[in-house]
Length: 359
Ligand SMILES: *Cc1c(COP(=O)(O)O)cnc(C)c1O
Image (cartoon, rainbow, N blue to C red; front, top):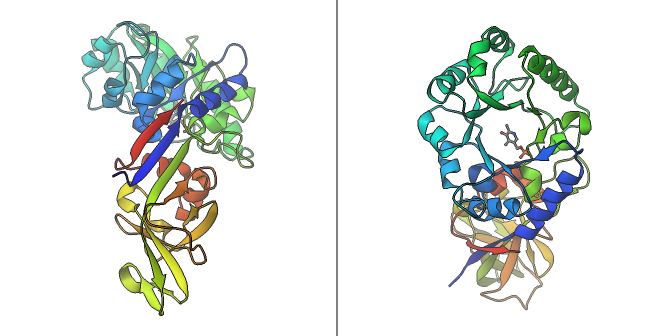
């Protein structure tokens, strides 16, 4: 009945969280970024697992994601802060305020709105230091510093910014953004706690940690640094073999007849495809692990199936499981084969997988 399964190791996520937390100084808190359904792994299970490790700061991107999070903690009122990175656009600020969610205010318009309809309620201020994506620019900060009345109406929890090149530790942009962050946050002329680092930013050193770090990918096992991955793998993705085929004469495999296979050969057709987020760009590059051995995909990835060359593995049969991501095939390696990054592999994991959460 079950054709494919996604195992999420919540204990590994917990260990990754504690590993990151251990790198921080005394005054620094460790948040968890659980946007996009915890990078596709399922925020409903991931967020409570991190809460159990005493994580009390959770970042989502959309307001709807904040509403979708499960109750964190025992009783009706939670002691966890839930921050909304994409701010107020498209949301009713009264609803956000009533729920006690903490919006990240990215524009002067956001700030004015929050000061008007949610005076005295908590918010985070985002300043741009070189990413040029979201947050107040230098001139906005200047203007804001002359409007003390406006900032006074906001319970300012953090001033944050985001690093563009933290995964390249020697990139000069890192130091430049750090400097800009110090300058711009000071220009607000209001003492406030600060937050700059994502996962990779944590590994740039304590100068980048400030009061709160915001790791996402590293919690989920993606490598945040350039060399050996210090994080533990979190997911195991498996699918079943639907058919084993003996190739007795030279023939092509799959759509477009782009791959020719020569006899004698053996192929296995596996129940996974691009509709499961198993990217079509893995055509010609992807490998799966059959009985502990990596075997190449032959022919194009199609919507619900792939075909793998298992020549010489006579004991493999219909119904057997193969590994697509896991111990032998780390998510970063699969991403590289697909010409993308681990983030995109995880956030594309489809909902046809039978999901299992282990502790
Ligand atoms: C997604 C995001 C993070 C987490 O980044 P990772 O690289 O996954 O650790 C942190 N801060 C902001 C603003 C983000 O958008």
